[in-house]
Every structure is written in C-alpha cells, then in structure tokens.
Amino acid sequence: MQLRFDIIQNTEEWLALKVGKFSASTADSLLMDKKTAGYKKLINRIVEERMTGIETESNKFQGNVFTERGHEFEPIAREDYELRTFNTVETIGVIELNEWVLCSPDGLIGNDGMYQAKCPIFNTQREYLKKYYELHKNKLSCNQILYKLSSVYYKQMQFELFVSGRNYNIFNSYHPFLAPIDLKILRDEIMMAEISVRIKEAKEEILNEIQFLNSINNI
Image 1: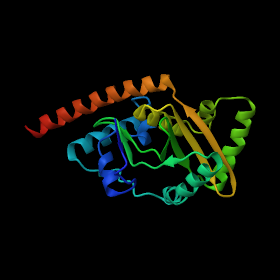
Image 2 (image 1 turned 180 degrees about the vertical axis):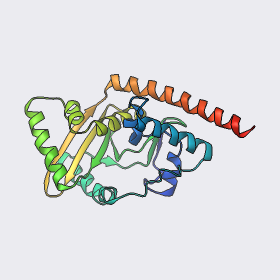
Image 3 (image 1 turned 90 degrees about the horizontal axis):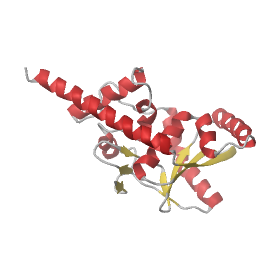
Image 4 (image 1 turned 90 degrees about the vertical axis):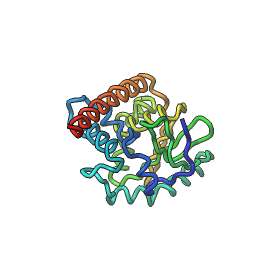
C-alpha cells in the first residue's frame, strides 16, 4: 500500500493513474449483482482500459455542475470541519493498494482516520438533515445512519477503509447555509470481506476476457 502525496486530484496525471483500476467511486457497481448493467459496465470499462491503456471511449466523464460545485466547496467544507472539531485534515492524491486497486480520499486524519467531504445543494442537505435527526433520535449508529442516507456513499467510504487499512472515515456533508453533518464511519468487516472477494472475482473475469480478446486478435 502506497500513499501518494505527489499526485493532485482531478489532474491528467490523477486520471491516468486511475485507468484500468477499481476505485472507491466504483464500489457500488462492484458490489452489485453480476447480472446488473452497472456491474457489467464496470467490467467492460476495466477490460477496455487494461487493453488500451487509456480512459474508456464510451465513458469519459467531463464533469457537471455538481462535480464543479464539489470542487469549489470542498476546501471550505474541510476548513469548516477543522475549525469545529480541532482535527487537522491532510490532503492526499491517491492511496494505491496494488496495481488493480486504489482510492482518492479527500483527506487523512492522524494515523488512523480519513475524511470525505460532500457538498450537496440546499434541498439535498435539507433532506439529509431531516433524515439524520430522525435516525439519530432512534439511536442508530453512524454506520447505520449513513447507509440509510446513501448506501452508495457508505460503500465508497468502506472501500476507502479497505484500501487504506485505517479504522475510521469521517463523512462530512456541508452546505454554507445549513447545519453540517459529521458521521464517524467505522470499518465494516463483513463488507470488507465482500469487497475482497468481489475484486478477486472481477479481476479473474477481466483477465479471462482480455485473454479471449487477445486470442481473437492473433487469429
């Protein structure tokens, strides 16, 4: 496992490093039923990128208003979190587990923590807050609350913990005109085991497909 502080997220170098790899942003698709379109699309993308060495032609994501918003507000969210909690968040480019698996957390906290900022629009944060206080009132754990708020984000953050080997990951949902939500997400060892198995199975499926395609190319 390698911590890459020399890489800056959202740069060409960062995008190139992610080519042909499983990342936290693909965790939801990885854990889907293998018959689903989402899982098949992930496998197809990695097969193509492994064979070509470049980002897949059919799925080049150029960003949208929501990703641009996230890039704009993330430093503000991080500073707000640091001021409120007295925790220092160290930015990092990438954590590489191996040549197949990596993640790009929004930051590291000490030697054992991670940080993930989300900067939703007003209406989304409002709905998060309403759900959060209802779930918190029912004494659910932070892990349970996040899973109910967004199972996609929960899987993403567990994937980051899987890659990093760290013990907790802070989910920080921020909007400048609404209260923030901070959830300390702990390792879900059951999901960790599932992630490990699914990566192994997906890797085998990808290598078999590449071998088949190469055999046809050589005919």
